[in-house]
Length: 182
Image 1 (tube, helix red, strand yellow):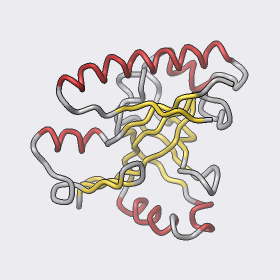
Image 2: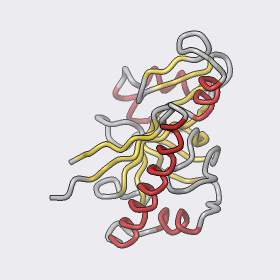
Image 3: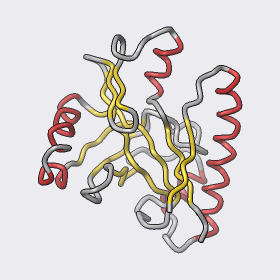
Image 4: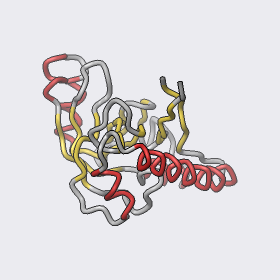
């Protein structure tokens, strides 16, 4: 069986910018890696799972992306993580806080997130902005059994990450990683 890889953003882009300027965790921002992050009084982020094709939760290409949401939605999300019934109902609209790997220009695009499985992170389930990239448009609409498109998505994301990480390594600030999943 082939091991699949999720492409995972380690931090929201606004926090990366603060770190570049010398900002510190706990002082200028807070991060609970892979869960929540905030720039107190300004921006609030949740880490979400996303698949391409978008609704192919079982065999799509997996991504871990940060989404900026409103303070009321952030507070509602925090309450929901301790209450199964609230978590089951959780949904919010926000903006991508990272470029989607392989699809530059997606930073700040609007998305809808919601709970799909109680035992997992919330998923990006709708892309509300008009995709600028043709492959992104195709990826969002692809059928779950379109393996050729999934391979193109995986190849594009991997190429993007290799290039991005080479640049980031030279600047000592990698943000994306790929993790193997079964």
